[in-house]
Length: 345
Image (cartoon, rainbow, N blue to C red; front, side, top):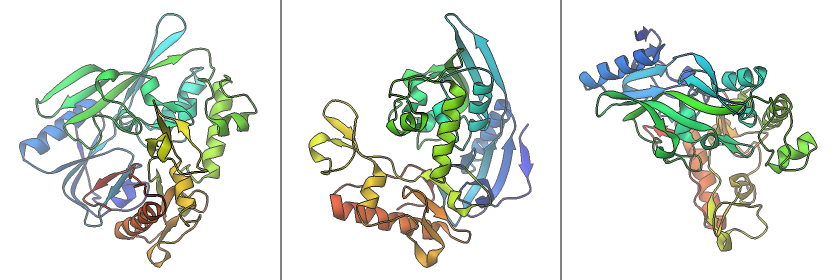
């Protein structure tokens, strides 16, 4: 059953600590409670916002004039298959890094490079979460969804029907299909996926393509993320962010700026680091926004941070300055990665 919450301020429910109030906030501790809360809002024609860990969202200072359903369902199950594989079923409200940590501790391989990413499990296919050379798309088997339009739960929707792409899916930006649980295919050999990302390979002192103990890969990823301020710490304002604010542009190879690092991204296409574009457009780590209330991270220019007393308007002004600077310098328009709720840049 959904549980009404007394507090309606949304800022504490996001990793940016930004966002105005909601009219109502309801916690849904199970998939059934999620469906019940959403149906109730739909029946009353109440504007509805779904919120998980609040790690990939920017909410307007004006807040949300309706109901917020906070997805808090928990539960994990492992089903052993053939050839040393397992299927890991996870409820949408499970903390993602907790899922990764538990899988590594249980001797499962595949998720280790996705360590330290904040948020809830249900958001991972929506965003096609990825890091250090691994994406959810490579591991996802299927999902259970609540179809708001039809008013039914659709079980085991295959991953290849979700339109998974670079940091996106057919679910992103929509609220008519709500992820209730996910199923992931992992290995039981306690060994990582091939280490593809050069920075991670260097940290592990192995050649790209090597496999290492999953626990070693997880610790190396966490250490790299901490060095970039990408592991949440309530006492450190430099981690009060939505992670990487802009996606890495995918461009025709001929249009990639001279001297920019690049990775293959399909026939004739390359992916260029947004951080490189930002830095070479004159923005440095710690670059301040309005009044110094927000700033680029002191550790990584791709993270926009709330220094403790910022507003969403401040953050978006800084994001606009950065995007305009890159556009003027390189003719490339950066695309925000977080979902913008009631606001835009």
